[in-house]
Image 1 (cartoon, one colour):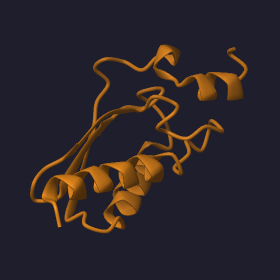
Image 2 (image 1 turned 90 degrees about the vertical axis):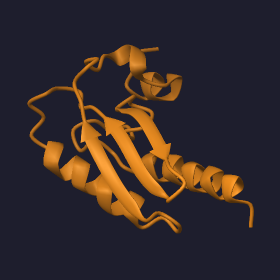
Image 3 (image 1 turned 180 degrees about the vertical axis):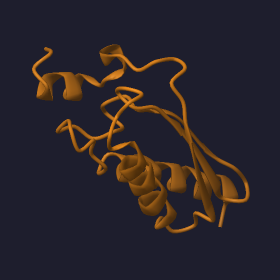
Image 4 (image 1 turned 135 degrees about the horizontal axis):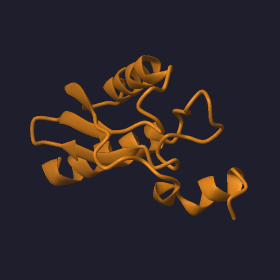
Length: 107
């Protein structure tokens, strides 16, 4: 099996999975909400996700990070998950997809 294709398949599954994780306070998935800044899968199938929150004092931060860790860890081929939380740059609504903006009434 081609290793490069394997990583691409894992990355596609990661995006699908992230689109099924919702911010508990906003009815939009965290991917379309623009909370995911970077997804990196290395040759050893270790996944690093850099993400943010809509606000630094989000009361659901721990739950959201745990959801990402658990669900990404269930993807076939993923060996390890590291979630890095950052607030630089700070999140703003310009990071949202058009679908998310439409869902929340911004369009």
